[in-house]
Length: 291
Image (cartoon, rainbow, N blue to C red; front, top):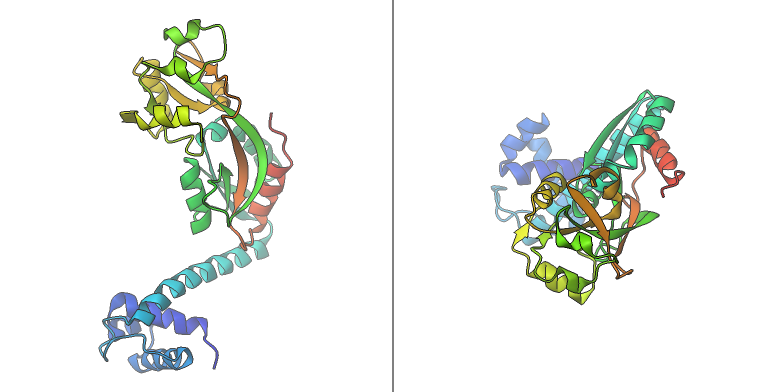
């Protein structure tokens, strides 16, 4: 006998409800049918999934199988959803997560063109930091991500889009604006640095020292820029944001350290098959030129 998807479904239902009877009701099956499925699974695995006969406490094997089964069932559900959506061909949902700097500058014209060419596709766009973009892609919450992949996450599919330098952002009346040259890290001595959470991959010791001594962290870009504009401090943000955020109250100042750049990539989950709509958008994204 081979393990069937129904064996995993029945086991997860019993394990999460901690009751064979309740699981049977949820599954619209008889308790005897559910019990037989569990017995078949245990025989195939060669070990007990529960401690005792009441099915309310998992064995060590059961705890491991539960985690793997939940992951496999989630993948199975996404696969079925993708197949059904792809079979329709003409319609579909495109779920995209992008870092704010891309979402408010380069993404809108691309979305406008894509929507004009494919009005039948539904677009679901979310902006979040790179760490959450990667998490959303890996969890299946979105189909496509746009951001920077940390070096600590090697097993993910990514295609390079462009590089973006980091700039120091300060209020228009900050003395830093009077320096007629790119900024050195030492120029930030005495400045209140607001940590945005960006630049986690920057290895410059001077920057790490500045970041680690920050007493204010703001993750939301809009709130961060508002605080900087009020003169509460300076921060480090991608130069791309200067296209929409720079103005009378804010200035983006370049750094002398040319190493302080990020790579922005399009991100997809490994071994995942995109639906027709998402695949079409992915091709449009990869075919675009960003400068």
